[in-house]
Length: 299
Image 1 (cartoon, helix red, strand yellow):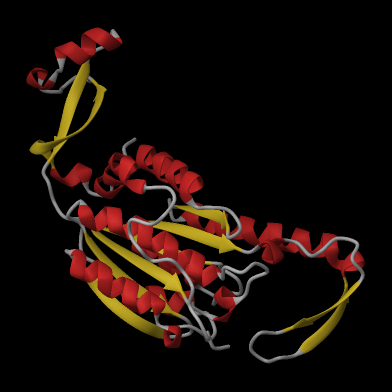
Image 2 (image 1 turned 180 degrees about the horizontal axis):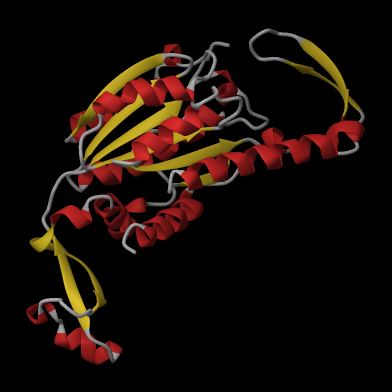
């Protein structure tokens, strides 16, 4: 399947909801995967934590401790650039949609908003677009030029189409990663290649990894009690007549099981995946997800 036109809005200041106000959440998440290695008297205030035996008493913040009625230690962290690599699925299934906005366009707008905030805070951003092969690679770099290069690649229609092989994308992207790195996999995770779960386990041993699963409403449920429909495979053009009355429950159960398996795969890698509906704006669920993950990495 070929993408004829790309309609996503990739202007950094245009998104209806601005992630800039939540940059502290993002910063906490970015530093979380290496804080234990560089924790020392630093340049930037990170957070408060309860005082424990063995802590340097000089680090106690007495003013904050008085307010909270318990001893609190001020943590700081040396300012360092973190590498954030977006692995985005551009295969055929990401070009399918029951609404005007394609899943690949939704994914691009999410990357636009998130990467703009990340690079503005001085962190390096990179992009890997993959189908059954690596379509485009932009290794993590710091600066607005990198940001705009990423947006240009996301808008090129020739970069879209093909089968999906997450395993190959993960395997071939490992050479781009440097400590500290955050890897964000963006896909609908429909019919991914076998064995991809093993690679997120491997990567998560050294880097922080998160998943964002983008699903169209039709990926999750069939029209209920609507009778017979002709469905067509996007790649092979093979057609099949189905009765939605008969397959509605079976299809829904299959999808729920599939989504649970994906969730389990990330949990086994001590990671997490966010499920997004392409018909709803990503802002609130994304911010809540990042907030939860920023708390997890600082436990």
